[in-house]
Length: 112
Length: 116
Image (cartoon, rainbow over the protein chains, first blue to last red):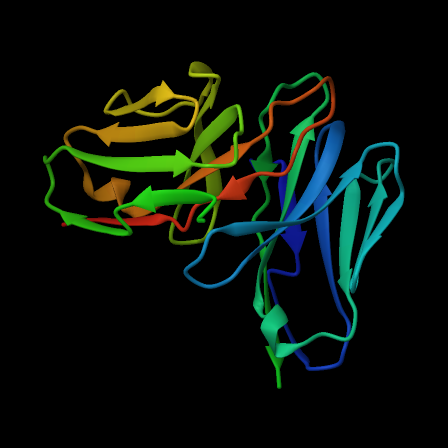
């Protein structure tokens, strides 16, 4: 079973709207990361949040982490057509080493 | 000035053949990875090397053998290719984990392998 599962699997919004994606995981983690994958490309790192942090911002991105609920959310504000991509959360387990497990991904489509 | 490069980008081959995918990073990272992404976009770690030493070896068939001649290169050799090996294979690199601090991974563009 997957360590991280994103919800929704697919999301379609109009340009300018906000997009929220959620990630749930099963076991305690050290860090949680979000990555973006454009069609036919490799993944690109967006943001990393540590287990002792609750919120982090980077430009139009806002990530929250709730370790009690084992969940994280990624908010993209004022979306653009260029934000169209798949978004993955990735977790590394407490006590683990160098192994990051990716979730199932949310496919975001931003309609111009 | 490509950070992580892979060759080839596309690979079409027949069942039973042996093939290799090459990966190089110029970021000075200590750790390199191979991932397999299936048709449903699920990304699964296969191997990880740190300073040429194998540190992660998931339940991957013995037909897959990684080789790291130096810190900057991690190649993947696949013997006796099967239909189920068809997927996109990604190489990635990162700085070495320090305590509980992990670092972002930089991904290559992927190699789309099609086995017929």
